[in-house]
Each structure stands twice: as C-alpha cells, then as structure tokens.
Length: 477
Image (cartoon, rainbow, N blue to C red):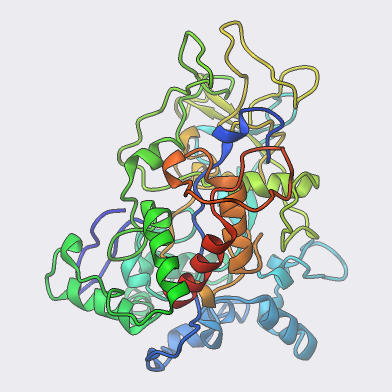
C-alpha cells in the first residue's frame, strides 16, 4: 500500500497442510480481516447515518447500504444479526434471492447468509477462462462467476483504498455504485448522491486514534511521518507483550499509519513464485534442499496470497484440523486458464495446476529433482475464490486479497474474506499453525505447544502465551 491522497476528497492507500517438506514453503503470511477492547477507552462519538446510506434508492430490491453494513454492528454483517432478522422479519430486503443458497429454488434458504456471506458476481477478464478437471474450457456464456465473501466494515475507509476485498473499486464512489448495482439491483446514482455516500463513509472510524491519523493526513502530514497514535495507549502486561508480537510479526504486512501497509517487501515477495505454463512453480536448477522457488518480481503489487482460500479448499475436503466457521456450507469449485492476452491463444498458466498422476500427496518431482506443485506448494484440486486474479487477469494474483487494517478487528468477526474463522483466537491459531512457517523471520523463539495436527506440516510459529498476548493486543488496537 502507498500513501493515501489527502482531503478534500480524502482517498487512501492501496491497500494444509503438507504431507511432505513442501509444507514449510506452503505457509502464507496471515492477514486477518477486521477488534474490541479489554479496557475502557474513549469511544468514537456516534455518527448520524447519512440517509442515502440508510434508506433504499427507488427502483431497487429494497436494500440500502445499511442492509449489509449494519450501523449498530460496526457497519458489517454479523451472523447474529442475520439470524435475528430471519427469525423476526424473513421478508426483510436482506433476504433477496440473489443471496439465497440457490436463487432458483422454489423455497429460498439462506445458510450462507447466516454465516455472514454474500454472493458476489464477477466478470472474467478477457484473458481468462474457466476450465474443468481435464483442462477443457467451460466458461459460462455470460463470462461471469460468483464467489461467497464476507462484508467488510466501512470503518477507516478513509485510510484504506482501493475497495472491496479484491480491490476492484478504486474509489468509495465506485464502491457505492457497485453495491447499488450488484446487491440492490438499482441503476446509476447521480454523482452528487455517490459523493454524499462516500463522504459519510469517510467519516466513520474504528476509534479516535484512527480519526487522528486521518486528521494528520488531512493537515498535510506525510504518510510516513504520521504520529504513532497507539504509543500512548495504556496497556496491560499481556497487551504490551502482544504489541511486541504484533511489531515482530503482523506489522510486516499490517504496518504504516493505516495499519494496512506492507513494510517488509521480502515477506511479500516470497508469496509470488514464478509459474510455468502448466501452473506449476518454477524452481532454481540444480535442485537445492530445500527447493528454492524462483520469485516473480511484483514491486507494485500491494495484494498477497495469504493462504485463506487454500485453507478453505482444505476445509471443503475435510482435510484440515482447523475448525472452520463456514465448514457446513458449500463454496464453488473453480479452475482457471490464464492467457497472455485477450486473444486467448497463448497460455500463461492453469491454476490450480493439474495434479501429477498417481498419489496427489506423494512427493512428485520433475526431471531436475524439483517438486511439482502449484503456488500454494500443496496439492490443490480447485479454488473456492480466485481473489484479485479475476480483476487483473494475472496468475500471480491467484487467491490474493487486499490487506485490511487491523484497527477495530475485535469488533468485526467473523474473519478472512470467506469468514472461515469465527474468533480472533481462531485467526491467530491458524496464523501460527498454518501460515507463518514460510518466513523464518516471523517465527518467534519459545517452546511451542503440541501441534494439533501432529507431525504433518510445519510447527507452530508462536507459543501459547504469544498467541494469547497477541489476541489481547488486537482487541485493543
């Protein structure tokens, strides 16, 4: 992420396991989404909700921005809210057919919505196709796919552009229009109406500290010179230790004044291996032990494959000990072909790549002695969400998502783009157990607790106390 532009139009910064030694390479740095305090501190004054945000536009399905960005729930969509509303008012516009489990069913059900998930339709870039297990092109005639995603809070939106989990909207005005069209079935709003919605969204902050950052930027302070607004926080000993863990581990990607800037490019770059046309990773030759992937230079890429889509693939197979919050609902299963350009003549990569014959969990190697594996360094049959790749058409963006700010994270459960973790404890556990081993600098010293998956995959990166302390700090952030 880069320094956000400043107001008047304040627009911010852009923001499993392996049965072999490949697991240590397959962990991707966790980027949690969304925090509540263990101590009382000044809370953000209530912001009067803009009527254009609260009330539905004419000619829509009755939904407004506030239908899914619920003000009393920190402007996000919580499973508890959905369950209460379904029990008390099943005819509420939230329960539109577009977000039913099967929009064409005679009787609509909303199991995904009850997990806080909404259906998002996305057009395929001109240089992509959907393919089946055998590699045959199966792209729908309208060249659209859908994914299930959680609803991010609008809090601190003044600090974290671009918008949506895949960064497909550059401005809040575009984000508002996209929601009006895609989720409310409405038409084009006027420029003035979109500006009013965007101005309101820029006024919502997770804390007075976040507002202070925005005020400093608005006054002309350079992004890198903004005050450390968390420095004066009165922390308990556990929270103070948690801040130390945060600075050593989380701040690599959740750094900067907005708590959403990649500051350790070496960590970021390790998540972008170069790929062969069959979608498998290109390794250095001669083969080393452990194998060394060739990295694809991505200096301007502020998104990252953190492993949350890969984890959901494992959840769908029942192949992970992680207790996923969304394990009881199904997700789409996709494979994609990426081409050099819109002519779709020259293939760049098939992702996930076709598995080698035989046991997919065996240590298959190529003639050079390097492993045959996809960008997650683990056998993967399909993806439940291609992430940023369906916006850019780049195979390097496969399963990559935007980096959210961690301010306010304790108040926006569940977590990740697909709501697979119900609590902050679950997030940090997944972070430690599955996603950090690829980066030795992010594995902290200390005696680790027994790994719940035994000898499969990498060891824990954090001790039990480090995880508990980190959660305590995140709840205050």
